[in-house]
Length: 448
Ligand code: FHN
Image 1 (cartoon, rainbow, N blue to C red):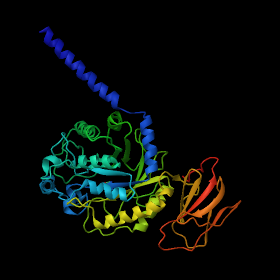
Image 2 (image 1 turned 135 degrees about the vertical axis):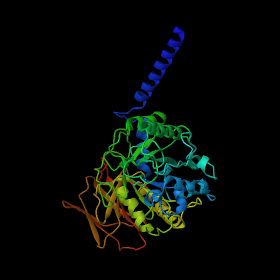
Image 3 (image 1 turned 90 degrees about the horizontal axis):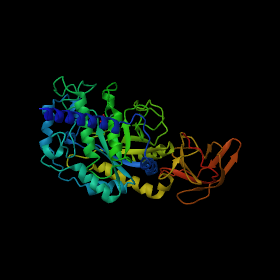
Image 4 (image 1 turned 120 degrees about the vertical axis):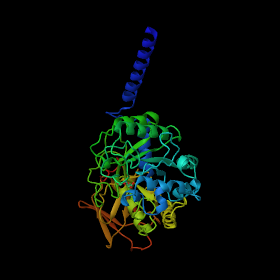
């Protein structure tokens, strides 16, 4: 009898110790990024341009990724989409090739969106692509393997908001029409989430980072972020944590992201937060929708997309540009053509974007500046005059020339600033980049 009691006590104490260890080992109330994480942050800032992918069973309806919520669909009806999902033309090699040709250096893909449907082989729930669709393959693994093969970093978008899981309770501002019982265990839901993140950061090779979304559904809930972030940084310290909560960053977050806005602007109404001293990213859509929307033909022009990328770089930020793949696994042709054109532009002008930081001239209506080493790149995007005036640069300007053909540009420095005489505007030139060679005793102060 004594032996049995002793054994029970031993098991209890061991279990308690394991629970305490996981709480302590993973929690990150005061986060210090590892050396590998700091290196990943520099890589990220140099990379400048990524592809965002919103893809799931919702794409079958061609009405965006919020279709379940917008049409107040019961979960029992929405689930009918899973056995019909067979992306016969899904070719990760082609997807990655399109991203690379566009000049994109990383891909952020939805591993699961708010519908809770996992596009990867998870043991935490059968609500996933392997167990519930005739396609039956782990799309995230296929894409991750191809990214590793082609030298593109992969980031995992992960929705903390879940319209399917019975333990996502109490509900937040959405998901009320899904037909779930009004009960559930919130801690059990967080354990489910941490279990999936453990799978994603253990089974798919090196991961560039995670892109969290959906906390805004329950802003006052205890999301136990330090534990979740600790799980990720414990498994892959270099992984960058990005959180789309539209607030100032929390401890453990490595990148600040702005949705449909440039850092410091708030035209879309989601970015009232101030700009933090972290690597920055703006995310936006190539048309108007994140998930595939067959009636959304409002594709931004290539000129608009190049300007978005350049204006982001001028604010020390990356552009994460979204494509919503079709249910057959192909990209919309309108997206492919624009991405090809952006890639061509970057082949000629990429030196003024990649590896740069926000330049000394603050963003203006005419454009922005970036800098790299002893060169300042003045990006003239929209102007109708013969010259532009910049603040007096901190470093001595040695020469000014056009990036596209090396033509010398007349300039004058006075106590009022730097005046640059522009060549006649050319409608085929999206961005007239003027290269200033400066005597860079120290790098010019960034504009932000
Ligand atoms: O609700 C999501 C939306 O579907 C999409 O994923 C965007 C991408 O940034 N984030 C949320 C809206 O803020």
